[in-house]
Image (cartoon, rainbow, N blue to C red; front, side, top):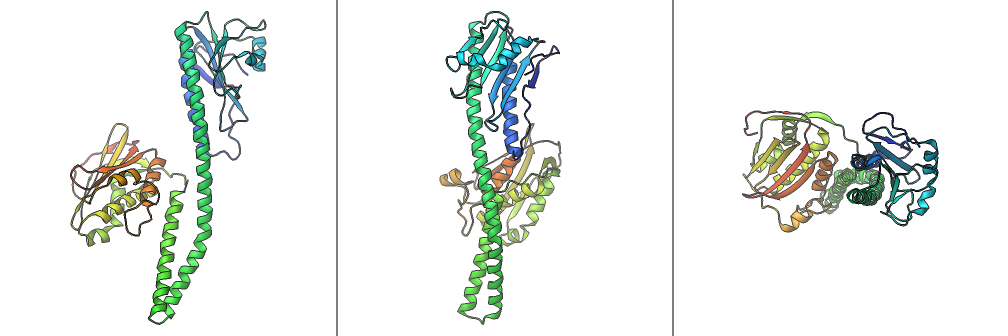
Length: 393
């Protein structure tokens, strides 16, 4: 365990380096990185107190419970004798802590006076504590700050553990869905193929109609299976710089036949706005939203698609002139398998939500102030836009 901080600056370093282990997922590594960032903020706050010269937090990452981690910070160089290092490493003083969140001085003949400890987390997790060195007595306000930070760290670790467990369950379920989906694709393909062959060779009549129903049913099941697999996919995003205007126009091209059939008028922004995203996945999300808007739009209605650039994000809105959203819709709209569309799978909006969340954005819906439903997508902004006039598509 290294104690010497050589340069007079705020520093933060791993006492025990965290190396990714085989089998660790990117998501778990991101959770671990967020935990480190949180702990960095906490010990930097303590190290900034005038009475505190050095701080260390020792904790167990719930994602890697077999490894004890440590981070330390100091505003000025803090030399520590070899004898003190050895004593602190043994953690013999841990048995003297009466309870969690109790700030106590570490008194021993083998170390310099001024060390304090504060344990946090569950009583069974003894290797989780704050260590600090103070130059003189700690005022009451400082002692309270230390306890509050220790309590906050303990609560954050509990949430971190819960989130990690939930993520692991999600990854297991995603893997099961993908495996089952691939196993079902082949038999569904065979059913569809044989139904098609039977439909061709059977004479007109009841048997041919039954073969046709079998084929349509197999097609519908295959489509539902594809959507379920998309919903459960953890495919890595392929981020590129993309003009949102071009992406919207390409999405609209896929629906031109349906739009013409219902004689709909599409009005959208016509200014280019570049940002970094996965074009295929965002196009899928836009397609799902546009499909819903077209389906619920009455004959000859209008659909409005607009986007604007804010300091921290890009906001895209899609508004239709349909019947709007009921209270039940607003509560269940993005839940898998909830739908008001006849023959719908109820996965389109769930997939759109997942795609947007994967991009670090948000998707929500509300009733338009005039009539119809309004869906909004917020995406992080990376590249500045090029404004032009607003016109009709």
